[in-house]
Length: 554
Ligand code: HEM
Image (cartoon, rainbow, N blue to C red; front, side, top):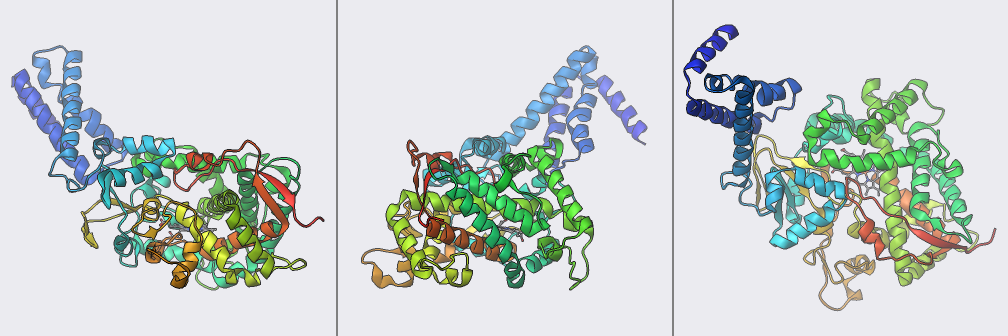
């Protein structure tokens, strides 16, 4: 049958003039655009067929008038030029489903532009500038991607009946059929694979991790104290701390990077991997073809988790729950469990370390806040009382205000996790999201918007959280849209580790402020901080050099 069609095509081809051959090539290229647009194929065989074999066949009619190589050159040029032009015209045309939304032309044309911005580390600032430039709550940041900063869109997009995860999550796992919970795009599979995480970060489980946390926080503060008389880079020390704690909490122990340094380069590897996540965030299909540092990291972490699952652990670590070693419910398949390894390493260490760095930078840059917070610590934990004891942490209102204010200005995922509509469009408040559109609720911009937080919108002002609870504390215009504020996200895919993360942040800050005084190291320019923040996926911080003075001599 195929031979018969090819034979007929050859017969037609021998009669065709160069003009008709060119028209045929243009027509087939337009059809190819339709196929790409409708089905978004990524398989190598289909891509090669559409981009190589089809134009090769289309060179046959040209061979009546030209030599073989000129005909191939001609058909490839006409075919690919038409394909690219057709894609560009369609993406900029009023017929594109996202045509009504403003955005930079280059972003509308291609997702490569967002990739360039992602690799520069400044995606968060670019998206914020784009909203401001077009003075719009919705902007188009990619050919098929919207950024939204309307607080009323949070529930329709992220809430229980909201949108599933977007295609970026396919890219993170190289389109693998087996994924960690955060990457499942199918809502049912996602909710099923979340069960283990709910066990692993339940109140009971988090209580069980507390003794390990206490040991590691104590070790961290001793390490920081040991820097008396020399500069301590707090960002790096927090990375070492969260890595060691994550290893203990997730895998029952294994590293001593606080003690020995990052001698095996695992902490550096993790940072490089997160930086490389910018690729899949912008151009998910690219990861299918080109593995990045992130994918090497992914495989290494998966093997680490597999080793833990096979060996078991003497402690009730997170894998004890994920792997259901207590046997409380039907056991998941070991492969499905090990795949959570890369996620637990990143979510369990990178998020808390950058948040701690942001907290410390903010309070050192604002000495009046530092003093007030330290006074609160001293009130709850006077000399002789261990601030590692978490009994009062939740009652510390100013500490809570500081943490919230830091997460408002420096959210751990500034561009949030991507979601996408499926075959049906949805209305997110007044915003229509057409089918097959990727969406981000851009919290970096939303929480730096005077319509949501006022006054001192872009300044660090923890007092706003106290005023929100007691308006009599402030005279004047005050806006506090706490409903839009969900630093651990919202809905069925919100942060599973929130309880642990909160406990960890509070314990480190309390114990550290009880034990030491910190100031910026000589020569450090605090204005560098925001310049050095990067948003490849989770917020990455620059160095935080400080002087350390122990308050309580040991
Ligand atoms: C300051 C610390 C942290 C912040 C601000 C944070 C924030 C977030 C956010 C915003 C999401 C949602 C991503 C999305 O919408 O696609 C998320 C998801 C998640 N986080 Fe966290 N996180 C933190 C720490 C942790 C820790 C310590 C763990 C546990 C090891 C953890 C485990 C998870 C998991 C498993 C998910 C995926 C949930 C799902 O898809 O169902 N996180 N986190």
